[in-house]
Length: 116
Image (cartoon, rainbow, N blue to C red; front, side, top):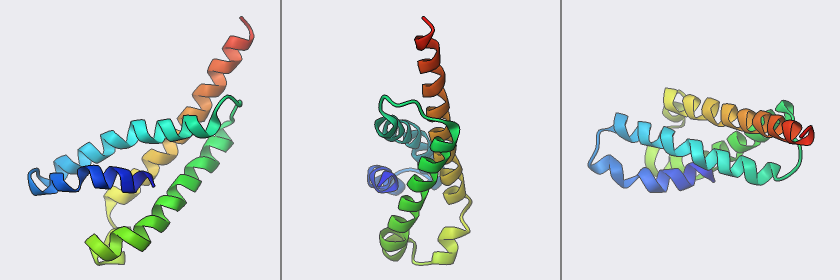
């Protein structure tokens, strides 16, 4: 879902900008979207780093399934080219790090507020 939203926002940019710039825009747009989805998921509960890792892996699995079903057949045409692309692995690592960071920071903020 996250990849579909960002892909639709950046797809037309490939016609007017170099691919490296579009990849950079994609990486930048991924940060607030993954953060917002993570915050929405965690809500007001205290989350641990392991929960952040788990939700990150779930986000990656959903993204991978949607890309395999939609993105690769329509635009990429090669599953090997898709999975061997360094950008895909960078996106997956970024998603995982953002969800872990969101869980860890939410836990620390709530712990500090509890002692006030």
